[in-house]
Length: 437
Image 1 (cartoon, rainbow, N blue to C red):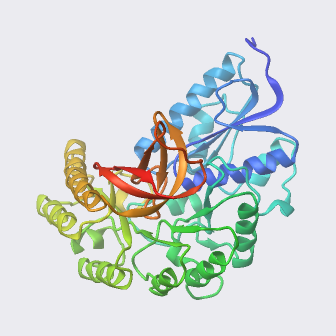
Image 2: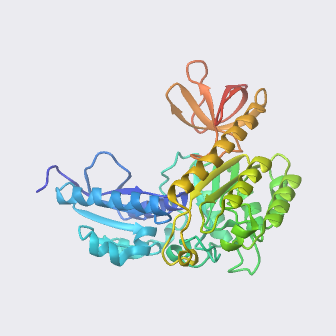
């Protein structure tokens, strides 16, 4: 029995997981809008006839969150507060038969590349002329910008190729057209994302085309920052650093997941790189772009990680002094190469090791931030929160990195504006600033 009136043809899209899922939801929402659906992202009104959940299936915590979200909306449907419930994304791609059996309340499950089929189920058409069109879920001044889909890397811990398929690069001209459309609507920052940025172009041009793509995107009028996320270390195209130095609107920022510090673990992870080559790469990057901000992610508790391996990684984190760093605890994923190994590091030990790494990084971040006091930076204002305008420097990505706080009581700046500021105070992850222009 229905407990409230539902708005016909209103769709509520729920997005879980990473920025790549956000991008996919935005593309789907643009298609739905063009088909005359009333579309909202994560609406709290609960008056939508249709709910579409875009799921994540990367690691255990993400899978659990996705399943709990599906179950919550399944109960809403049972109680008449939703008419139709659809599930798409990585979890659905990977576990569709099991999900169909265990959660029959869902009307249909779709994989990561089945948007046309999802639209057809809703009696909507996939409109090819909308390539590059999205309904942004982020503030309009920045956008995640996916340049390829899938991954050809053989990393032993990773299930992404199972969910996203092989690497497919989006043509440069198509990406430039998409950037132009975003810029025309006021987007100032493009955050380049992919399962593997550095592989871009190898599948179609037989060469790494990320440097050329960066040059073409940096020529788009109105784009003031271009940021690189998810760059794979093995085979990194060093020409990217030359472009970074050439072009003022390419942020001196690089997110490069390195995953571990010992050659033994990197070999077991099938990363195609050694500790020595990793250190040489970091050194060359910092030599070419001395003021670059390096972000990485690491994994604790991979099968076979000994106390000695972990201690070496700790010492490496202390000596390398990354500007930004995150840690995942190893998740034993079915059908990956590592699933055949014994998951021999206890969960408590994985967590303890992750906490120790983050404690070291917190102190490094504090020390690096103290060095910023008295210096001036260009800041993009993202939002208003409490008593502050909150923004970021070119060295910080949304959601995961440092933020710059400007007192709302003392100063006025506009969300979406670039503002020159001076840092007056610094904490572990927050910088307090005053505008100077």
